[in-house]
Image (cartoon, rainbow over all chains, first blue to last red; front, side, top):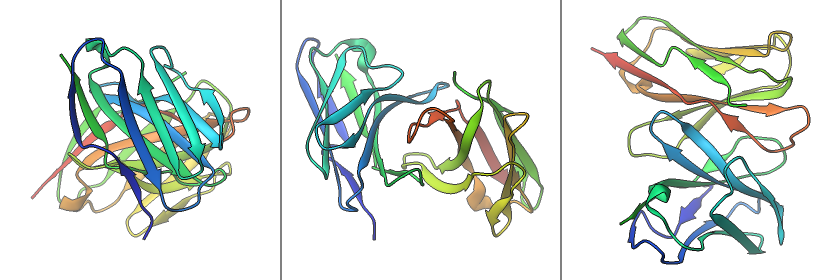
Length: 111
Length: 111
């Protein structure tokens, strides 16, 4: 059974803190993605990675960075969290150009 | 550019049919459809890869018109389990692996 896991379901951080969100997949997928989901806006791509140590910016990369040191793990980093980064964060993985498998999401609140 | 989904929301009685549309301003390689239930991760429904080709399962099918850069999702004889938010994700001809999602269509099926 395919699986994408995320480190936390809920997270509360203070403004200015450095935040790490981790995603792990067990399907040996080469492609991994980070999205944020906000009401009425759908899923917006932050960053994606098509190989270890490779990354590309998505549509809203400002304020975020990523790290992919191992194939199964893709981390999203908020260097200095701000209140406008309060959102649901979803990780996904895929192989080739096929269906994306999503993790359960992390609801991040920045106060 | 984010694809445009319509309608934004629809309420059905069990057994009724519905159509959800997804329109892009860019030439497309593929269109994905996902359903997300409240509090859960999006789940893959289908991919449309060729113009005019319909792919589906059970009572959910879809079409893809390459020329018009549009896709439609058809839900026939809706069931209570069809309730959720439906997202289309479009992949451009020049953007391997990267999907741009629409803002979603909220579907509620009532008994």
